[in-house]
Image 1: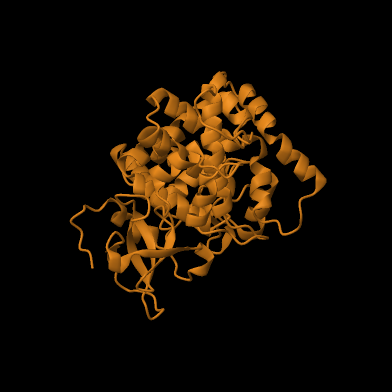
Image 2 (image 1 turned 120 degrees about the vertical axis):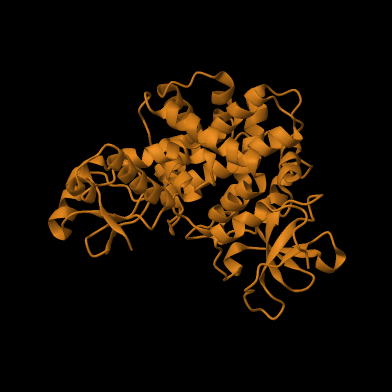
Amino acid sequence: MNLVSINVDSIRLGQPLPFSLRDASGVLLAPIGYVVDKRADLDLMIVQRGNLFVDVDESEAQHRAYVGKLHSMVREDRALGQIAGTEISASDLDSVRDNSGSGEPDWLDLQAQASAMLRDNNPASFPTRLNKLQALLSRHSRFNPDGALFALVHLSASEVRLYSATHAMLVSVMCSLAAREVLKWPAAQEITLCKAALTMNIGMTDLQDRLALQTQALSPEQRSQIDQHAARSVSLLQQLGVTDPCWLEAVLNHHTKIPGPLAGRTEGQRMARLIQRADMFGARLAPRAARVPASAASAMQASYFDENRQVDEAGAALIKAMGIYSPGSFVRLSTDEIAVVIKRGANTTTPRVAILINRAGMPSGDLIVRDTSKREFRIVTGVAHHEVKVKINLDRLLPLTKSPVSDRLW
């Protein structure tokens, strides 16, 4: 653990923490994503535990911010005492995020960015945050679409922390891939679609996060908030400066259930339908304190059929873009091995996978990659995330999502 003092004045109130807060001995005081509502809460921590610290080894972004600040102070010929006492501020972390699109994505950092954006009610800063997040997601999904899907499907299916932010990013990336790779929508339309997906539930962000942890039934007030959230989201977006009619129409109608082809609908309604089917997939996939989630394959198949049990055009586009067994989902092979999907295949049912549990039911130490288009390694069924007791290491598995076709297959 490498603890560094943080300037308490730089902690943004009412927004998720991009780092964990600790005391001088490393004891956790507030986890990443925790929202500090009042300055009095911070003052109480300081009174009880002394100065606040962050562990720069805990996050790559924090480490880069810390090292970058030290280098800057050395170049400015600052006094050694001043350099030794340097602190990290929130602006230092923002400067790291500004360049984060040039390297490997930090998906946990993007979660925090998305959560902060969805809670930003300032018209001066909201558009910048949204545009930046959308551009980063677009860049990562173009550079390595399998990696983006892997990370977001895994995070959506395995945790409830910052649910609203993770869900919004997953739906946005799903819609982006379907619009670009299958429906062949123009680039400008794709960008609007992605922004609408990211902000579809902005009117109930806090409620979404609470409901992910709630075990009791919905209260009448909560049900009313859910029923009205699309209109509330549109109103809030207008207050934040959004004027694009297609964007607003897509958000307003993203729960409207009108089966049938996309042709004949307005541009905003077509976006709304695609968002709705992706939203349905993400909701079925995500865990809840009071509900067992579905497997990714089951969630995807549910999105494939419309309200009349006919093939849904938007749902079919999503399946063609992601596959029935999408990256990040778990499957059981004919060999009785359990694997995680790492890359989409030549068709929707034959992805490439990495073995997690061998046929003896034991965790696999080696990352063995299998091609499920081969009969001996065909997929038998999808497996829900809660049924797999192996912890996924994103840093270890994400490189496999962009590996060349020449990778060793067994």
